Length: 112
Image 1 (cartoon, helix red, strand yellow):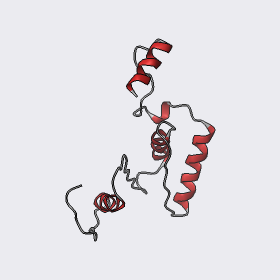
Image 2 (cartoon, helix red, strand yellow):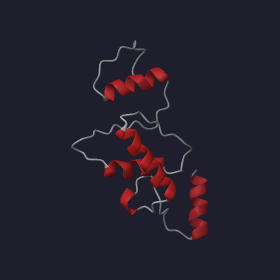
Image 3 (cartoon, helix red, strand yellow):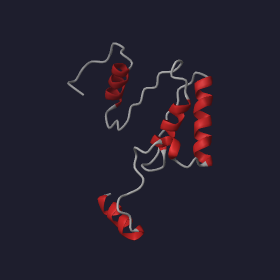
């Protein structure tokens, strides 16, 4: 990945990489695919469903979720964000219980 950054900086004569994972969502170009995803997330929200967003690195998942979060009414919704979960399904469930402040019925196999 570092080699790709060096190549991009050299090719485009960047002083630094202009795009990062932590950019402000409101300053990003809104592509039609991003708007479609946000509208789909609103549909899941209205139907009180559960959605899972996954895809390869660099396709815009994080920035789209940040833009979606900005459209939510903070007084009505709590957003929980679990990221970079490279754990077992049991570890995922433990993390989910922890973030929701629920007791975890799963046996503990050590610290997460």
